[in-house]
Length: 236
Image (cartoon, rainbow, N blue to C red; front, side, top):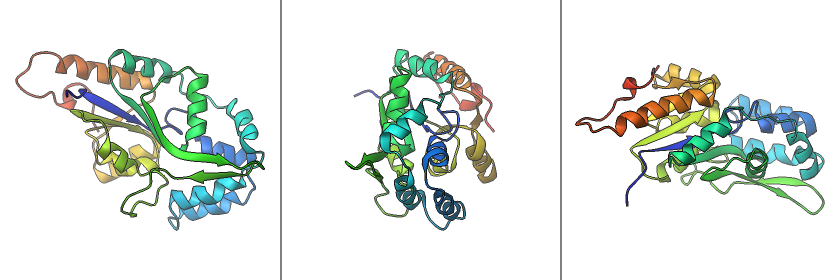
């Protein structure tokens, strides 16, 4: 069985969306006590799994309130064309997020965007409208305190010559070490530079698409040696 030349693993909140969706929902809909929980996470006293488990039930109004709020959430305007390019080039595109599956699926469907799959935490709602969260993809060994262990997703993923990670935040720190090519901005970019991890900066998905197009063009030419990433993009 042949493997694709590359596979893309893309974060969602703050990467595909303009702003962190979970933070926006908490700010607009949750009891103010969510901020105290957030402070514990920011201080490193708890992981995102415990943080989300305590914060999500604080959101008032159930799914109807969330759905109403999602009408004000915008995606990066270059992401639809990027997703379409991936399908045209037979490049697997997976959305991997420590956020909420139903939120992600709703926003992608609204924009008529098709991806190969979504890995995320599961949002539940009781008959009374109380929200809770389940974690279908936790760390197997228990060492990762995130709701979704991105390292496990990339390690178990589709075989490819090149594994590409796209991200912006703290949840992307761990799997950045496992990818062959990283596109980073914001907190992930700061982390990679501090840790000496090579990465490419990006402002939008057009930048990423052009870099990957050049890489694919070069790899499809008959060559005796592998194509180094430095031959097609600036790596920092």
